[in-house]
Image 1 (cartoon, rainbow, N blue to C red):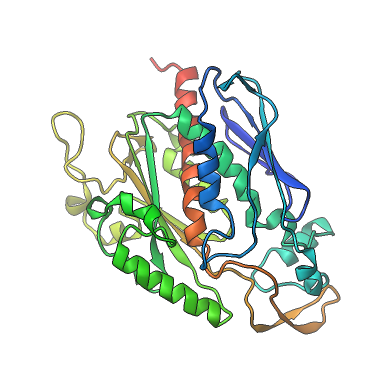
Image 2: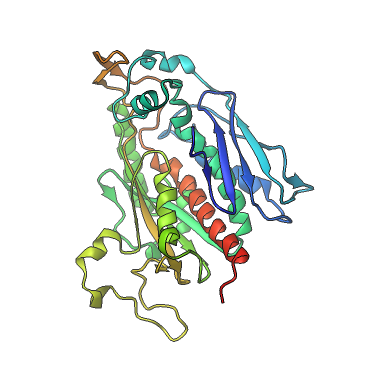
Length: 355
């Protein structure tokens, strides 16, 4: 299986399956001499881990990360950082009923067709559990990028959507509710809605928005390695993501140039920021902001028509522990992937000198 590594200078390779012994990764290219805040790294994992509230999967995993290399006396050494997170609460029998059947809109069928074999226990390598390793790498990337802040939050769940622009929201409210929505009133409505979806044996999608502040001018490479292109790739690599837009996004297509252009201030900043902090694929120093759309979880607790590995029509119903809506737990994953993109371009800027 290819495609397990992300990054050019700062690289993360992940390994492991949902119901294997452990998941983990190897980070290569991290600068030496970075003093790591291990509590901050663990806190990022705690934000993503299952079982943290009544509106997420009830699988109970401590998700405690153990580091095996690349760190000495609390500082990075510049050598590969190896780490692992043990799986402690597998219930593989919950998936025995799909051993020979394919869940609609899940990776079950494509994995089987491509590799001739699949780990049906929790989806194996296709499980979103793999993203815990990304969160570890992203947490370290954040500590390299000390002057850059990442604030992701849930802006929509199903038809419920925050209408306020991000600069009118209080990001301090994000971690004060289980949905991770910075609007307390909307957060309560979203939570009630998700609980009803769970009672119905169904799932629902949503949107995670992210704001990156303090980005220096000059990150990103023209043509094929544009900053927004890498952000899009990073976000679309996250399980269940179906869409990505930055700045004015699709709404910008309805405007005229005279309405959309960001006019300059004398210091190089812009009066508006419909560009989303990126112009020509390069950061311009303004806030970078984008939206990431997540589909409903494919596994639902209702009867569905499907096929088995013999091509026969069968009826199946999901079992086990699944998120009725992934977006509350996806917030730290979006931040982690954004940090991995920016740290890679940040370090690339240090290695390439432009005349």
